[in-house]
Image 1 (cartoon, rainbow, N blue to C red):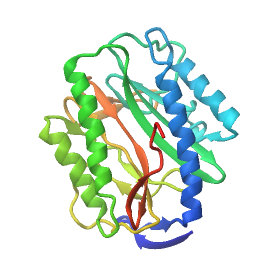
Image 2: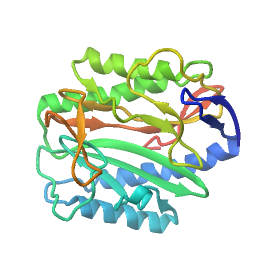
Image 3: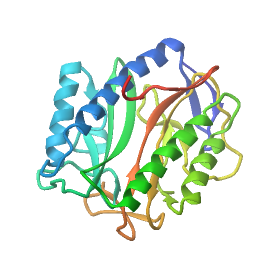
Image 4: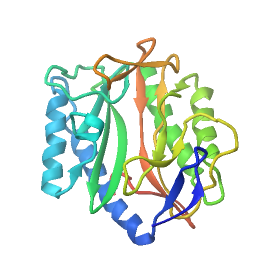
Length: 262
């Protein structure tokens, strides 16, 4: 690994070799398989604890380490956030899914020294049409951001694409939490805001790997952290959606390492 471009906060951005990116793809494909497995388990009555156990058991079978468990003291393998919960929801035996809920599942693994990280928001049965629209727009905003993962572009191009799409549909992007670089550390430089902060951001180079993760609220962009110190909710208690992919910058354009269904 080598460092070259600096992030706006002065930290060096680590450039990965092709071999390292291939290991990261392996890690992210395990993440993708886990999320696909969990999606098949989503139904009314299932607890977030049940989902956490399924993910951890799958990690054991694959001989990888859940990335979030114990990270800064986080108690679960999954971050599971329901409805107005934006991110970092703690798995619980008391939290049962109900018809009409949406559940955001954020998951990562450590595999052969490198991390994978991805997230998806899933409806529990039939949901309100406006909530469905929130999910669609958030997923689309991630895809819009990924199209900007081109060598020579700036981080700001990703931010602008995400924010523009979200706000054109009447929703808001969370500003307190952002995407990030990823590699041998779960969170590396650079930060990837989902809102435009000006052009003075790092240029993308082949070998960078970015975890791009729009968090989109139906109402205000403002959020607050609950007394558990982890769970983030929308300030107005309106629903929030979260989608994330780990994406490598290559000379041929973006390579989505956590792509599901392949």
